[in-house]
Structure formats: structure tokens, C-alpha cells
Length: 118
Ligand code: 5GP
View 1 (cartoon, rainbow, N blue to C red):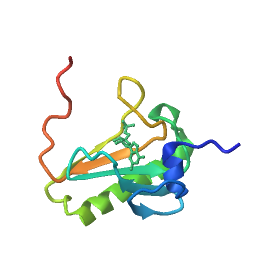
View 2: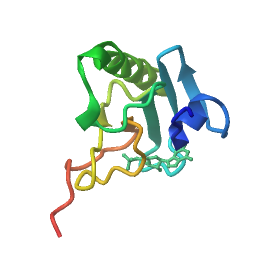
View 3: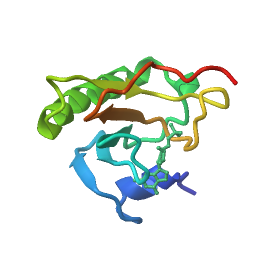
């Protein structure tokens, strides 16, 4: 049986998403619950559950996430003002979907990187 995640269903067009970019390795689509005027998720098409699972074999695709992020930042008109790239990992990182993804956030000042510990 082929392993699936919510995001691999988006890659395979089994569930709808606002896809901004797709190639053989990478897919980028708008977050369903945006935290900023631009909030895009950039993912490897192949499932890597978390950053804890990355290996040397993933180096090329992980590099592609940055290339696609840079291109989309330009297309979204946020490159000059700047933006944030974010990857959550595991429980303390508040990761919700276990298919590694890079958040591209921008379009307003984003404030400090972390909220105060509660
Ligand atoms: P995480 O917390 O795992 O880093 O981020 C998961 C992100 O996926 C969240 O920002 C959430 O809004 C987004 N998300 C969850 N379900 C869906 C969905 O079905 N479609 C899209 N486009 N985004 C989703």
C-alpha cells in the first residue's frame, strides 16, 4: 500500500488546493488558514515526515524548496520587503501535518520570531 498524507493527496490532486507551483519534485500551494497576506506551503512531493527524517538523499529536494520559495516570494511581490521561511518539527515545534513543509509567510511585518513562552 502506498503511504499517503493530507499533503500527498494535494500533490496527487485527490483533494483540492490553490497550487501555485508544481514539478516532479516539489509542490507549492496556499495555506488553507493563512497567518499572513502571503502564506504558502512548499513541500517535497515524496513524503518525508519530519526534519528528523531527512538524509543526504534528500539534499537536492530540500534545496529546491528554497529555490521555489525565492521564486514565489518574487511572484507574490514580497521579496523586497522580506518574508519568513519556517519549518516546524514534531510536538514542541507544533507540527500538525507529518509531511515536511516549508511555510513562506509575508506581506506584512511579521514581528518577533517566537511568542513568549507560556
Ligand atoms: P504545521 O503546523 O504542520 O507546520 O503546518 C500545517 C499547515 O497546514 C497549517 O498552517 C494548516 O493551516 C495547513 N493545512 C492543514 N490542512 C490543510 C489543507 O487541507 N489544505 C491546505 N491548503 N492547508 C492545510
